Figure 1: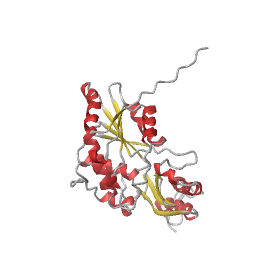
Figure 2: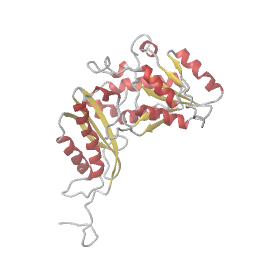
Figure 3: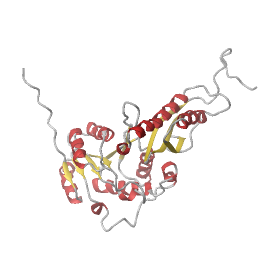
Length: 316
């Protein structure tokens, strides 16, 4: 019986300069191909792999998938973890090769920001002052500025971003819309461990006890999802019921220092009375700051029908 040959894994082209990136994409452009971009800061895990895989499935024969690997100093405030942010480039290349990336763009800080930090940056607007912006007021200016630069350098037709960084996804979509950038921004669902923990490059900072404590974040979100489908009594709104269920989980969690727990509409506006919403949480577990979120569908905010009459309970 003949042995089955292992699939051939093609190594992506590694470009570290703008010129090398342009050269790597020149044949794609010449044949009229499209480019999909997966922007990352490296330390790739299965969540990133799902982004690359999604881009690869969507790519045609003449298209290319580009993965950028760049730890952007502009989005880290003083005292944050820029210096210790994990850098695992050789392992990242293996992930990119396995998932079918064509080009890995891995520039230096000097290549992205020649002459130092830019004098012209993107003002992210009021949405950036919510949630993450309450404790990281300069973060999204750095994020949007570097993403705009990557869009300019790579010229993607599509960009693939994870829903785990949901506020970032919303802001990048808003930037593309407001500034008329010809990029289709594709959100890819969060990838989780079997126990529910959302995959993050920062998870590797957690020791065993902290990792166990961190599970409270996903448990709180799931409690909110379940509460959205439950009867609401006592004069509370559906949103208050959802937040109360999630807060109850976090209240009993040890080793979790909550930054925020918020319910919004899908565009980060006020939560609706019913329909699509987003439940978002951020907390510190030990020295590590983690974020997570989940889609929530809010049902009818009115109390359950009267079980005897099948109609609403009416006035009292």
